[in-house]
Amino acid sequence: MEIGGDVKLARMTSTEFYRHILGLESPWSVSNVDLNMTANRVVVRVEIDRTTKWFHPETHEPATLHKWTERRWRHLDTCQFETIIEASVPSVKYRDGKIEEVAVPWADRYQRFTKLMEQAVIIWLQACGNVDKVAATMRLDWQTVNRIMERAVERGLLRREDEVITKVGVDEKSFRRGHVYASILNDLESNRVWDLVEGRTTQNARELFETLSEEQRAGVEAVAMDMWAAFENAATELLPNADIVHDKFHVSAHLNKAVDDVRKEEHRELTRAGDDTLRKSKYLWLRNFPDLRCEPSFQELYSANLKTSRAWRFKEAFAAFWDYVYQAPAEKFFKDWNRAVKRSKLEPLKKVADMLANRLWGLLNYLKHRITNAASEGMNSLVARVIANARGLRSFRTLRVRVLFFLGKLDLSVQTHT
Image (cartoon, rainbow, N blue to C red; front, side):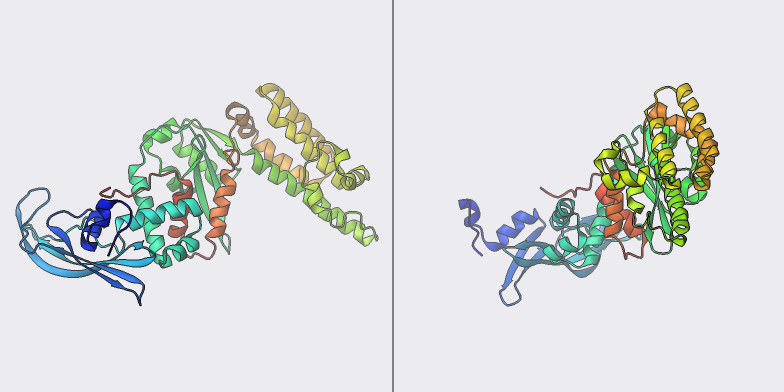
């Protein structure tokens, strides 16, 4: 096989070429390269010197040959030819009775792909973000790509340092039909997913916080979350120095739902009277209009004498709460807003107001820490996208691997001879 480019490389034989790219040294060598044009495949045969003596890697005591095992590995394509590495790999027996297969320099033990192939797949996945496309491009099966991702995440978690983390967010995401949830812990300052567990019970939340070391948990100053009691209970127990900050985007979601509940009830009343004023207006009420003149259709609705208009005004008025800097005026604003809502006779909004009043301390903590789960450069949307791309996966373990692979900011690199 002739290799173009550099003169020195051009003069290499095919066996020398593959010895070089696989980083082989004595006692390993390439004995044969078989190019099959029909099958569009290159098979590289690697041999080891059969007279090699074996020793325990730590005690350096002599070991005896146990058996030979024929193995194959998928390597990077050569000029668009599928490339396979073949070798008989020895297993040795140590004096303590342990039997172990000898490590080969081009791949980790018991893997079906070389280190260079593994690193290439990781690079493609990081660039493309689509597992199926990478599998098709690299001509690998889905299980192989998934295994490479699993190994990369395992390496990354082992390399992750026990650094100080001061602000975290905990959130829940539905990842399968039937209300199957995952609880996700975000490192808000580093804009990364720290870890995730299946479920959203108090015990699940405990398991999630316990992925932080005891020292890290003690260093957490604030944790953003919705008003789910399970998260509150676990945070109070395991994050002793952390203020609980109720996420303002979850508060907005509750207020939007209350406005929509008012709209639906009023729409039914108007429809019975033959009035279709609120027909197809749902998403208008969920939007923000700082200047009502910018949307004539909404301005007309807003000006009508509707319960929904009043509910929307209360929802919009509450947004001013998040702009306060000091606790006392923010608390006064909330009490005035809450009192007005109670007089409004808008039951869905009154329920939300009661819920917020019971968690006012968590809302006021936002003024101190200014953190949210969604404010960290769109982390929520990125997590949602990874979960959406993983729809149909039965295993939570696979979902966890994908989220940490793409959003964990782990060191996923493979240590190769180069």
